[in-house]
Image (tube, rainbow, N blue to C red; front, side, top):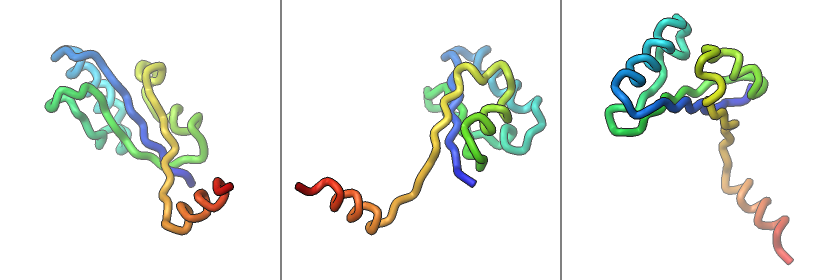
Length: 92
């Protein structure tokens, strides 16, 4: 399975922060209840890392009201061998 980073922004407003947090906590989903939040540092977003088969699968885990603003990024890890291979493909 692939790993995905989900970023869900919300407005820079105390009421909006509380509402966003409440939406996540009320789902009861282990993943959403354990989201990381940047609000206390002025970054009004939640972040979650989930495993799944596709971005569509990951999107279906999120509450309907946050899906439109959610950004989902497929994550990858690289080794030095990967870097060497990429560089080798781009040499003239």
